[in-house]
Amino acid sequence: MSSLYPGIQWVVQRNLTSKTDLESLQLSCEAAGVSFQGIDIIPFSSSLTVECGCMNAAGFYKADVGAIVAAVSAWFVNVSQ
Image (tube, rainbow, N blue to C red; front, side, top):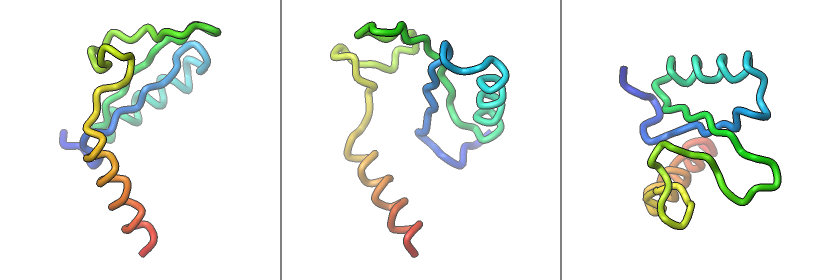
């Protein structure tokens, strides 16, 4: 299935979300062709338990910042028209 939103990923904290809401969100993402990642965040911890391989050595999500800025800018231009 092709995605209407290529490159978009939802990262949702599992341990603060009801199981029903989490399942509904995941099914909605799958229906839209959007990547979904559930993670557990330990309260008052400075680390994330992410095993998706999507973070760099500094603990940030790998991303092409230029592409993100361009996409967000284009979105705002389209929304404001």
